[in-house]
Length: 466
Ligand code: AMP
Ligand code: ZN
Image (cartoon, rainbow, N blue to C red; front, side, top):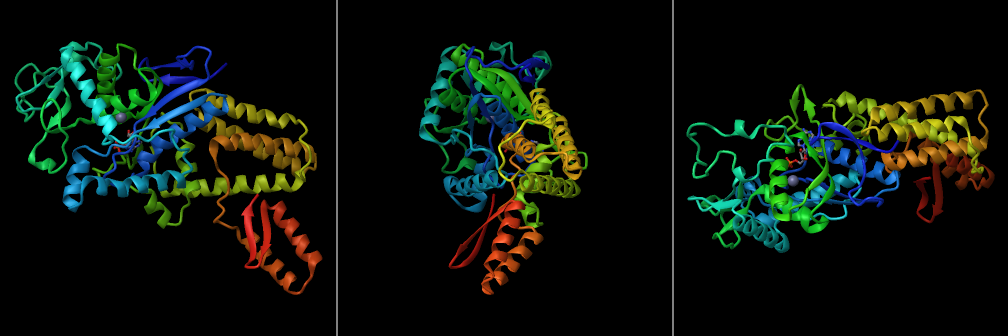
């Protein structure tokens, strides 16, 4: 049946076909973090949904080239770097580094490119795009020195958000600082320097200034992926005005349809409100790690809620994730112990593996997919209890699990060693000290059954997950 995705642009489920017909190449752009603080786990909900999408596309044979931008110049980065008394680049570097550590902790696959807005080549591209828009009459410099996009020249504006452009136009004069603009909806492409910007500015045909946030994404996306993207993602708060603006700028510059599929995840909520920095109701990943949760537990909690449903964040939710993961761990250990490295032999139980991927084909229905995984776990555990599962069949199920785990990435943490395993290692240590080699080997086999390899070195035993 193929993959179907809900396109925010059409508000319909659509069959996924890459723009290049017959090709398996997918170009995907994902709006990245504004690096003025540690990302909160609401942001990571968006990045984990994008990770699930990429990994599922890859599981289905597509090759995904993904770009995630780093917004390292905007009002907030400038404001907070000045407050901290550091240069913008030094200030944002701290949060860029933290971001990469965090995505590794959450096992999010690295994108192919992480362009930063302040890189010379992108600033140059933003300026040339704005020049082009101006020469086409689609941008103008206002009295305040800033350059704005002239919305009246792009009637499609509002289609993604399903807004009526007329409703965006105020009838009378609105008392707003921004009233040098021709129209309230006109958004800034280039912001003229003012004293609050300090030493953050670039030269441009319109004088000293800096780019607007929206043009950053248009420039970086088209520079790296070309004029047409297969998929563009973000959280729902990005739809308006950010993604509308990206469409307007990009399409007016390239003359091509910018994006084929727009995908947006719903918010991570806390007590009925969006988790956000401005509301102060957020947890960073670090906050949760300090509470003793692991990256994979947080990944589980964030990835297993369907991306278009709001996800209510609770600490209890991560505790349930912990319980579910130990169930998976026990199951894989049991299967491994039973399979004894036998060659795989088909079993009807493996149909649950196909069902897992079929559910993901259906607009990433991950809760349906997890239902099939837990059916597989329950039924194969029952077959193990009843001694009706052969070693080869167990090996077949393990193969299926490995495929599933390419998408979920729920491997056991090497750093978290179960108490039972720890006790066996100590027992083995005593056996070795007593030179009881047969017992030492027996314990090694038992550890292997539990999914751990043990190596002896002069510093003692070294344990690694199998
Ligand atoms: P920002 O750093 O605010 O530009 O956000 C980076 C990404 O995180 C964007 O794709 C946002 O849509 C997304 N995002 C922000 N807050 C949340 C939230 N509470 N739940 C889900 N996604 C979010
Ligand atoms: Zn963006």
